[in-house]
Length: 289
Image (cartoon, rainbow, N blue to C red; front, top):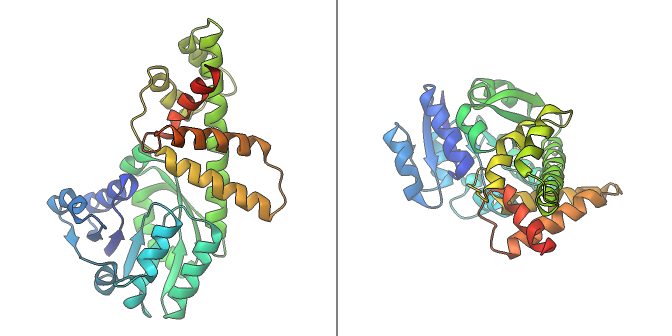
């Protein structure tokens, strides 16, 4: 099975590498072509434009940073639309809003292609380990044909129905995650400022009903002010913003998420956007000084 792959950031590179390791033929494209070099060493082919990838491959996956990048790859010169046609499938696994997914779907299907949105829950380590959770929606036949690839990339694939549902579900998941991370950060800082051991707090949380892999995985590094990017903070804040917009559309009051979004915005203004989203704790520390 030959697959095209557009976008080799933190997530895309790990996902494309997993496909190669499991015997898939992969043709890659990235805006900065030098990012393709390591994948080429593992057997990938490189195309110079998204259109060339689409022309070569029956199935193409995209993993891009935000809605503008997702739209650009489809609609710009030498983009996906120039070569998509009947018999070809396009799977966009970027985290975008439902409106963006619907716009891409309309364009792809208008040319005779099939479209699935498949945003993922999980960051760098789950991507490397093939343990992502795939939140797919769109063309059911393309979803079914993509299962061999999805089974390499993730531990579970959900089919959620019509296009837009995958994007909405991902935003809900990341809104909860961002809100939790902000509350966690406040707890760590409050413990420290109160003369308590934040390491002991981690042990206590881990033994109770609130234990979870995120606290366990991120907490020790946060206590050392270390934030190697598994999921960049700027992307978390983008997802909070999009989730709040979804809340506005549906008249859902979200004061906790709104407060968390302000903390992530503060952290971005402090120049922390490219660090892990756990670096939001620095904004909490700053507010306490």
